[in-house]
Length: 367
Ligand SMILES: NC(=O)c1ccc[n+]([C@@H]2O[C@H](COP(=O)([O-])OP(=O)(O)OC[C@H]3O[C@@H](n4cnc5c(N)ncnc54)[C@H](O)[C@@H]3O)[C@@H](O)[C@H]2O)c1
Ligand SMILES: O=C(O)C(=O)C[C@@H](O)[C@H](O)[C@H](O)COP(=O)(O)O
Ligand SMILES: [Zn+2]
Image 1 (tube, rainbow, N blue to C red):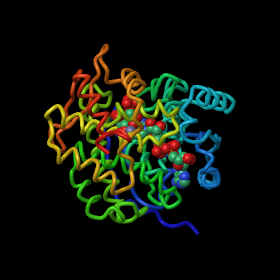
Image 2 (spheres, rainbow, N blue to C red; image 1 turned 60 degrees about the horizontal axis):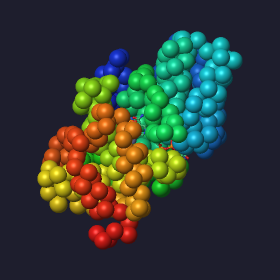
Image 3 (cartoon, rainbow, N blue to C red; image 1 turned 90 degrees about the vertical axis):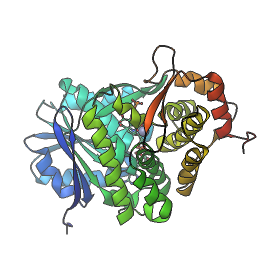
């Protein structure tokens, strides 16, 4: 017996075309209508979702589509040139045409790769994103940034390629590990600091309720975070300026991910990155100590890390120099000059950077 779809919200994104982010429960039945005219569907998923991917494939096959399923390596291992090349080979064998559709079913690693494969196959075919982690629902699957990593850094190869729809079915979150749910909360909290303080109030007033999969608080948090992202992306798809605010905490966060050989969860690295950049903004005289401390407090409440290993500064500084916001040799950070007031800090004094690092280092005097 199938359960009826319940659409809680439909958030529009105005990019090179307009598309909706559907938020709700039991939304599988919505997929065939979204696939529409295509004859073939290329369904990409991680190994953790193999059984569920067969159900999705079954629904699409019953609706008359020819489904080619591609099981990817798990997590960040999927975001490589080798895996993309494997997908292109599968698409070639299936004679996948410009009117066919890619579906990314999985977390952010899957949706980033699926978007990239769709952007590059035949110079661009449609992609429908079906995010199954909190992080992918509120962030990765929305907005059209797609890409893979290289040995030199995070997301260094990619394309802007907007999905034709995003289907956030909150029931997927019931089977997600608690640590992955928490990791996704980092990007939700990011939206709270850069644009929507109500998000912070909701998490602070009941952190346990905020982490109940498909509960009312998490549903509201997902909708609020998606609305923040949709608004920013609709105003600046290709990151000429405003979109940089979505990178809050990411300069330092991506450096941690590279330094850890992509074994840290993205959301955990971003959590530490936000505390770092809050310390930096405080030292630069942009925010008060209370707002900097609020970062630590709210991230702590949901069990996210707020510190990083001491003795790693040189490696992290080098990794940060490859950040996409860097201009020439000048580092640029998204910082706050008040709650929900993001701005940029260009070429901060190296002493301030090191002092901020010392403040968040494990084993430092500030412990
Ligand atoms: N494109 C963007 O705008 C954007 C935004 C934010 C993050 N990202 C990228 O997203 C990635 C992180 O995404 P993530 O945190 O979702 O990690 P992930 O994709 O690695 O998924 C985390 C784990 O959860 C498993 N999983 C997925 N759905 C599940 C479910 N419903 N039940 C059980 N297990 C499930 C996966 O197999 C994996 O092991 C990073 O690569 C990051 O760079 C991209
Ligand atoms: O959508 C954006 O823009 C973001 O920056 C969202 C980030 O959460 C996300 O991790 C993104 O993939 C980072 O992009 P990058 O351009 O710094 O690689
Ligand atoms: Zn991110």
